[in-house]
Length: 63
Image (cartoon, rainbow, N blue to C red):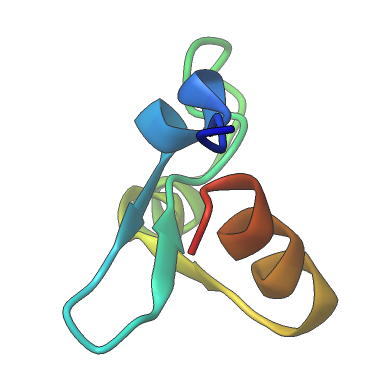
């Protein structure tokens, strides 16, 4: 049987050429008024998944 991947997860994360797993930051959709500008700037950059979560994500993507 061909292994199926989690399509919803594949749309939310990106695997870099070196094998790192990148994700977007949460809490950036709406309600930004009360957040500080520094907090918004920090949340704009992509974050990397590490540890056990990274392993689980790679397994769900079939890698």
